[in-house]
Every structure is written in structure tokens, then in C-alpha cells.
Image (tube, rainbow, N blue to C red; front, side, top):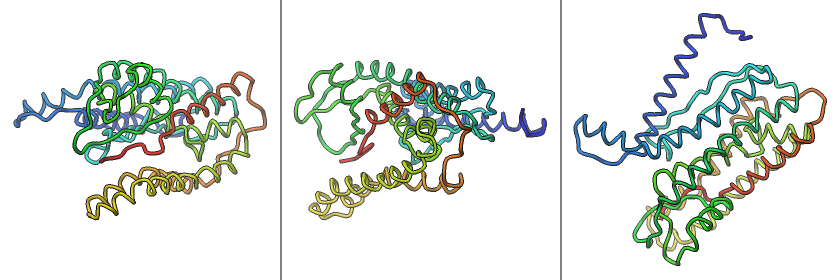
Length: 310
């Protein structure tokens, strides 16, 4: 039962709905094609983003409601998703969504179910979206400046299986639907980081118990190692080019995991550091397998360089 007074419930629904509608507009805008000026032209341009926005929003909704319904099934109070619109600077138009759970999750089985339900449900949508999108994409020569999406083991395998080998000097130019599917992989990868109270942190705590707190303190600094890898990869060519633009581009290409290192640090400080404990008890064998598969999914989704420009 909610501890909020009844008068607060309609307001909470309004906030959820408002944030979702703002996110819908931001994601449609991200996928929109440039059009003529005027309100009619702007509206037509916004609606042209549907082949990116609809599948991406579907992935996000299924992910978040996977958590929501798993929490409800275990009697854990959970809010509706609070979507985070990012209309101007965001790559996708959104930073995803969060669900508030005011109470501690007492059972490790419940913690695993709630933590894993979102990523697994989201992937059940993201992979078909990506397959359809890749079949709509073209292999073309790489010419001039552009951007390169992150390459994970799963993503590389799907591209190879569906499109065959890519000739030197060529790349897959993603359709909007393929980009939405790739974004679903990116979002799932971030959520499955086995740190703090991200989905991966919940899954790892359900599997390892309090030992997860030590594991999290090891994994979190490793993100800075990935930042260093990208700096070594991008800085020397930028310094050789000798231009300010090349230097800023190299820094931008190397900054993704630094941002997430800082975000995780902030979330850990706000959450009191270690993961909240569960009551004594072990995972059931089936759930243990689900936990291992979920953490293994992070490995095949991991992108050392999620986004770069050239």
C-alpha cells in the first residue's frame, strides 16, 4: 500500500504522463527528417521520425513495464515509469526511464526477478527490431565525415549473419529502425552494468549476495580504464592533425564511459553506497541460471566505444 496521501496519486500520474509525452516528442524529433518551414511542414517532419521513435519507445516501455509487473507480482510497491526526455543534446532523445521503489526488496528471488525482467523483456523486442532494421539497411562506401555506432559481439554477429562480410572501406548505413534496435542494445548494456543499483547491480547482488558490494567497487573504477583505452585510441591521431576540432572530437569520442562513471558515483552517493541487503536465502536453481545468463548478456552487449565521430 502506498504511503502517499490519496490526493498525491493523481499528481503522480500527471507527472508520469507529462514526462512520457515530452519523451515521445523528443524521440520523434530525434528521428525526424529536415523539412520545409511552417507549422505544417514541421509537424510532417516530426512525424517522419516514426520508424525510429515507435520501435525505440516500444523497447523502453517493455523494459520498464517488465520491472513494474515483476515488482507487482512480488508485492513490491513500484511507481509507474518516469521517462527522462533529452530533446537537444541527446543521441536518442531520451535517457530512458526510472521506476521508484520506496521499500527494500527483501527476497533475493524477488530482487532477481525485478532486476532481470526489464533487460530481458527489452531485449525480446530490441533484437527483432534490429533484425528488421538491418534488413532495411545498406552497405555503402564510407566517404567524408560521419559517425560510427558502438560495436558489441552480439551486434557484430547479427550484422555478419544478416548482411554478410563488409568490404574494406564500406560500412552498414543503418535505417532508422536499425538505429532504434541498436539503441535498445545500448540501453540494455548500460542497465546491465553490475554496479550500484542499476539492473545489473540488482542481478549481481541476487546472485552473489553481499559479496556484490566488493565486486561493484572493482567494476566501477574499470570504467576509467575504458576511458583511458579510448583516449589512447583517439588522441594520437587528433594530436597529429594539430587542430582544435580534432582534439575536441577525440575527447568527445572518449567521454561516454567517463560520464557513466560519474553518474554511477552520484547514484551510489545518493543511495548510501552499498546495495541494500536482502533477507537470508539463496536463489532457486532456475533463477541462478537466469542471473548468469543476464550477466553474460552484458558481456556480449558491451561496447568499448559506444559512439564516435570521424
